[in-house]
Length: 278
Image (tube, rainbow, N blue to C red; front, side, top):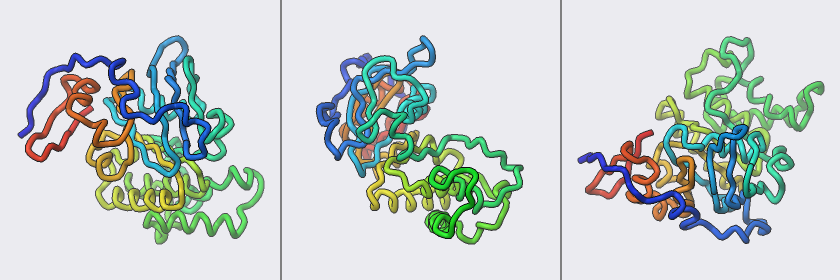
């Protein structure tokens, strides 16, 4: 039975860093991303404040929170595209801008026009341009890497098709394959399952599991709490402030979700499963 819950009076400051790994671990090679009471802003407008915790190398961390709460902005800050106005963010032992060459990013909506006459294989090969440059032709090894990435997302048979003819879920799989060809140490995914069919979601998760097995760290923005429970090691719960950062079960509690989502939070009792809607 679903029951709407009232706004919690738990403050953001009371929850900051609860369950988080101490930030003095930032010099360890096991730390992929370090948030040290980081606040980010667009101009003078604060978007997200006081994020504190560590993303361990090889782990998968979910960014959870309502729309407009700062999840996408935090991902852009990890990429060095949004300034950190207080505190700091360290990525792979460097500043976000210096680490960007080792980071791959799959945005919510790709800028690639689906009507543009480009094949699926060509889209995936775009991920290799950082290594080969924009004026050099892809080598056989680059094409092999792209083919393996396309096979990993279950679309090897669609390589010659025009990108725009694919379904939304298939396009998302192609964009993940493009990111995979960069062979990143850190993969950032912004709402990758929005509007994606079940088959594509399973293919995406399988490919992500393969990356993690190879040592890639994954940070994923999502509204799917079931995914966070089943697939993620840790959760960063945010809505303008941080409401928790740590192991999934300890962070996605009814109290924290009520605090982060307010009246939009729903609790499904019985099995103790927590569901939240943006």
